[in-house]
Amino acid sequence: MIVKYFARFREVTGTERETIEIGDGCRVSDVLDIIRRKHPMMDNERNILTAINEKYAGPEDAVSDGDELAVLPQVSGG
Image 1: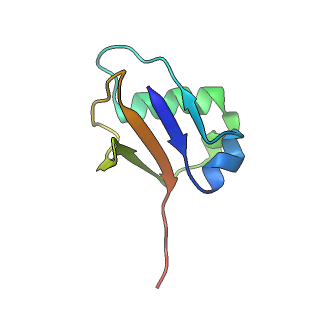
Image 2: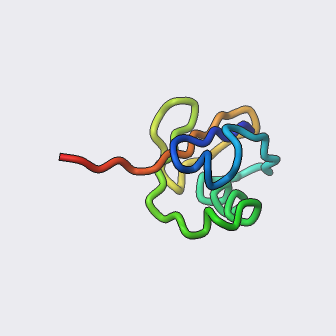
């Protein structure tokens, strides 16, 4: 699957996008675990938003090999 990083996550991972191999039955949380192992600095990040194929997704949502997962920081403001 393709993982795209936005904002500070580009700096933390050192890349804008990468391909990650996943198995059947993977969830967003599984992919985030893979990302944290591959990029240890991501382990410090807790406020992560994700989107599968441009639709917001939660940790328990399923992902497939052909999906695109966006990894974005939460935005706050007033």
